[in-house]
Image (cartoon, rainbow, N blue to C red):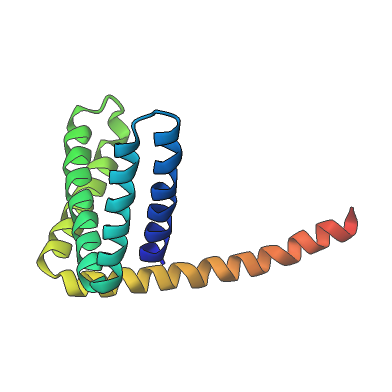
Length: 140
C-alpha cells in the first residue's frame, strides 16, 4: 500500500510541476520530489523485504536512542519518585533496540505478531463499544 501511495503522490507532484512552472515558481524542486517519490514507490514494490528490514532497523534505532535518553533523563530528572520508572523504561527500550538489531528476522516476526494482537484487541474493544454507542443512540 505504501509503495502505491508514494507512486500516486509522485505522479501528483509531477503534475504540480507544470503548474509551478506556469506560475514561475521553483518547479524543479517539485519535479525532483515527484521523481524521488516514484523511485521510492518502485523500490518498495520491487523489494518489499529490504523496505521492511529498513523499517525494522529504524524502529531498533529509535528504541535504542530513546532508551538511552530515558536513562540519562532518569538521572537528571527533578521528579524523584519517577526516576526508577523512567530508568527501567529506558533499560527496556535499550534491550529491545539491541535485540532488534541482533535478530532482525525474529524482531520483524514479533512486530507482526504485536500488530496482529493489537488489531484483535482493538477490534474486540470497538465491537463492545459499538453496543454502548447503539444503546446511547436509542436512548437519545
